Length: 74
Image (cartoon, rainbow, N blue to C red; front, side, top):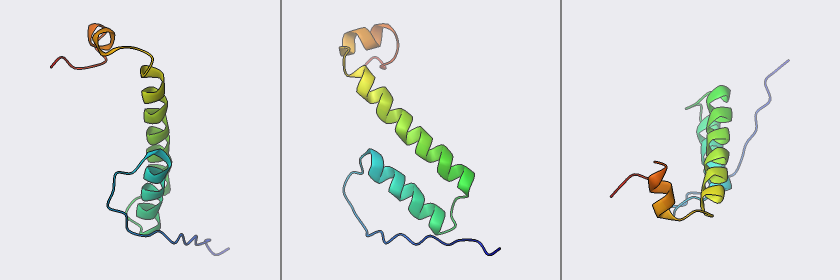
């Protein structure tokens, strides 16, 4: 059985990429053969976990996050 080829028409974007857009960037690298499928899955999971972490840390102030060492001291 021949491998399936998925073509995604992505255009160049020079701005800051946000969560789902960063996953599309990883997909682009996969389609170009620069990373394998395992790397693609790992990157997408890492991007999603980072978004979850940011969302949940927003409820705490910076002083508290520094006290518990989740923010580096300045």
